[in-house]
Image 1 (cartoon, rainbow, N blue to C red):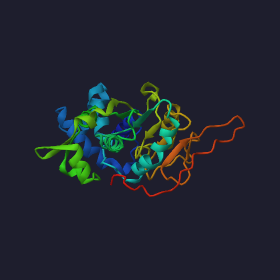
Image 2: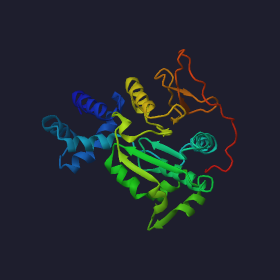
Image 3: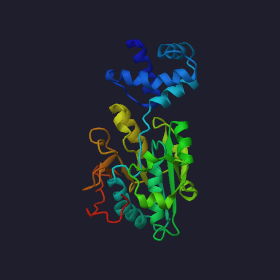
Image 4: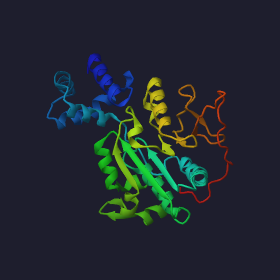
Length: 293
């Protein structure tokens, strides 16, 4: 692979997905794109680059972008965000939304569906408290292939062993051969839509809760700012944003600020007429007893 070819593909990835690759990731580029070359009956990576350069075939470029975007996910990933969602965020929203009894949740870059289905399981476990409420979960990703997998809700033994409590597996999944499928009721709780975080999310509607976890780490700072500012536009002043453990809004945007005492949870920073920030809601730091593990 030449430096020129590497930079050319990196430019396409950055423009189409926001993904930024450093020079030490050249090996990753070649290993992930060789299967794409074979799919299009091209003998080598160099041939793939040459076809993209000369034809700019959108179908080929789409396959390249989908192959390079990371689709790593597992159920109840990192546990704590789901504890915070169940024990702190949901009760706060149920109080503030008592009149409308409606809550919308966005799982951005949802990959193969483990995150939105984890949220659906939490809500299903709370069915008695949520009776009469309309809860919408929208999962989005730029990969049509991964969204098809998410809609199917079919997972390998390895995938269901990563973070999914055995009680949840027994209750919400059926074994099909050597794989496990989440039941139809849970699948119906999640709407999946193709969406690129570099685009305007207004088309998706407004959301009370946004999970955008372990996504920003792949973007450069201007792209992080652009994405977070766009997300803020589709959230109410009392909405909640969840980011990954290695992610922050500090030095990136002033549209969000951390909820006191709750690492990884952010509220929309609303400016008062005087220019001062509205105080963020303060939750008691309590053990999330009964939260799925």
